[in-house]
Image 1 (cartoon, helix red, strand yellow):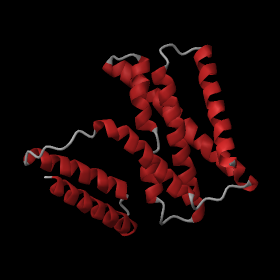
Image 2 (cartoon, rainbow, N blue to C red):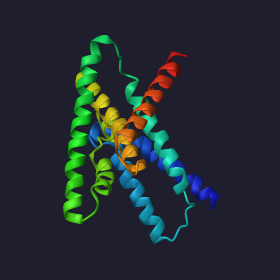
Image 3 (cartoon, rainbow, N blue to C red):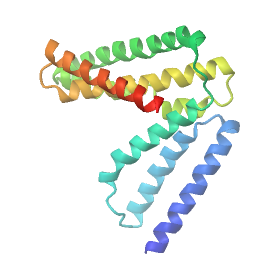
Image 4 (spheres, rainbow, N blue to C red):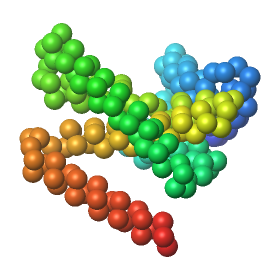
Length: 200
């Protein structure tokens, strides 16, 4: 049975590689094809009663590593200098404003139509409002340099800010000036550590 699982994993890796190569011609992001493939494999395991090991404890770790690798791969072609700071600032604004506005509107819809608290509605709305870098970065290969850089910056910043926003709403039972200050201090410490680590 272990040999079958190893063979299936190898086949899935080959299919993922084929999806990556073919995405430039089909214009379908390889991530979308991988999601469809994953869903199809799950349906087949249910039909043929194949018991898979429980991977749920590993999913958060694998998802985080995958997101980091996708963002790093997309950022390899980027060059950051003083002249590009206004460009980065614009992409930051275009990542933050739609994220917050659509999350609040969607949370209000959840609150009004589904009868949940606004905070619960916001927690469920934020993931739907993030521009997924997993899809955006893997889809920009055929764009010109300007649009490619814009999509990479915007989707990466949207992911980062969306995760921070989600964690802030989820981990704080009460949102007040104290919780905002504590969260801001944590972000400041992370930025300082990041600069030190980058310098070394």
